Length: 245
Image 1 (cartoon, rainbow, N blue to C red):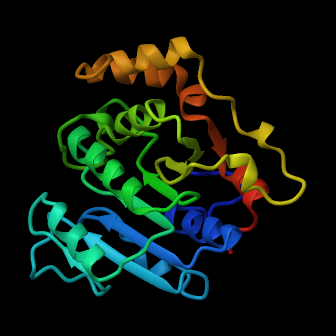
Image 2: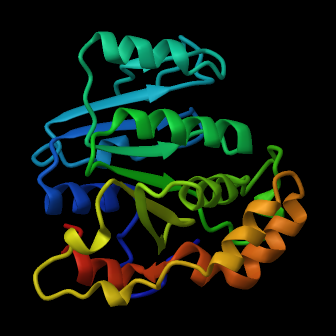
């Protein structure tokens, strides 16, 4: 989603950098495919000193000029994760920007959540599809956010050990914190009241009912996205967590 407010530079990489700077993180893992991610070079090496990129659906001949530490030529994620663990890999903050079907996004969230420690953060891309056409469950040419938004919501709605909110920039960047409250992370003087309260139990239940009906899921999301996503502007994110540069 295009961000047209006073923090135009805020994208997924800037969000990662800002949160890492605020929380003192040094270890970063990016999960992507050749058609997603694409901002690895913008990760700040003065803050995140240990960076790693893991890619799937990525042929071994693929080279975009940035390092690829672990890769899989198909949708397999088990093999690169095992290699990451065997190499002693660590990740306090992880960008999840993989293939945007429901099955792969759900899998990616579960596996990356298992990698980050308590207090760690997942940044989930494409959580605010700008149209029904961009939110199709199957890949389409052009603008495609898939159903990452649905997998993201199902994930946070079913876990008591998460806190979350979503930044309305760069097609929607969902922030998931493991076993820690968002209110613990803010800059001095900032108030967590700037982030919408969790959705009502009824709205969560209605959302979780839509397991396979993605048209109905999108209707509910489109009508209630601010509440369901706990959505904030890029400007509010800047106020809560500090400058992005």
